[in-house]
Length: 175
Length: 90
Image (cartoon, rainbow over all chains, first blue to last red; front, side, top):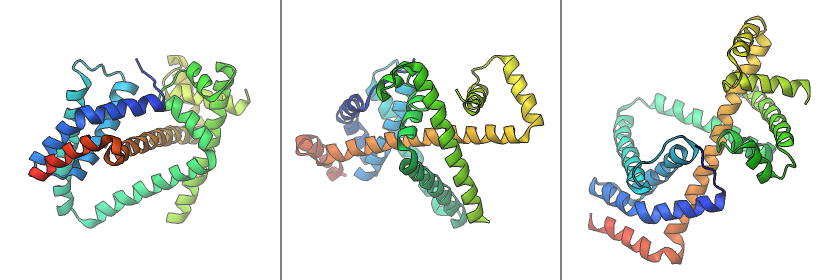
């Protein structure tokens, strides 16, 4: 089951997890020769994965949060360490391609944030956070689930058109 | 709802596998015949991916601000110094 919480509850959860699980992550990273920055990067990414698995996904944590989160953080850190080694021996071209892809996604997201922020918030609440229609109606102040549903499809249409617009202009740009 | 919104709803049911098997097959057959519809379906699929990326980016920003908070605010000074001591030893 998806457990939906709002931003202030998330802030409390993430702060608690920092206090409980970051010290162990830091010790592990330090022991294997990593820096504080490495530990912070890995832990942030681990919180994201943890949140998607446990809060947005179906994953039921059998053990307590802490060892599970620590396990994810370790894996992320070790993977990154290995990847850095590989990247150093890769041809530059491949690395550049990946960066360009990330940049164009980032550009599109910025564009959508500027032009359709409310729609993007509404859509991500449903398709990413997986809020029920009832909680979505409540969060965005719709009188009924029905009107929230209609608005959701209107937003989807609007954003779909914007995505189309942008993908065409990117093609022109590349051509 | 407008016709165009009904169409979006139908595509959604197909993409998120919410419709029944008959509707699913019908949609696939329609897409074979109507390349414009097939394009719409592909575009909508891409739009869902973009929405998930957006949600993830928002969450990432929230996490970053928590990280900044615990490494900057005076309230977390003892936490911070215990972390810094871990890296001093190495």
